[in-house]
Length: 63
Image 1 (tube, rainbow, N blue to C red):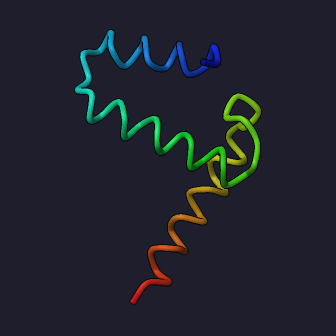
Image 2: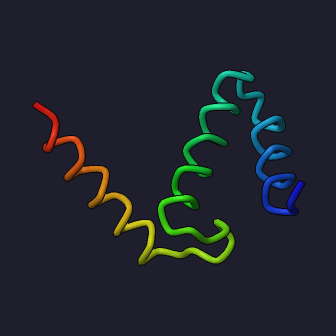
């Protein structure tokens, strides 16, 4: 387990998020990292914005 994942899990547990929410957040971060083929700790605000644009365009591409 990476340090980032461990920190994220600890923070979500500290905030008393449900396991379903924790799993959902982890999946979203994994998809974000996979999109750029880089670990999430190597991604920043520019990639977040680009990923948001990608998701926005994806939602409009569906009929």
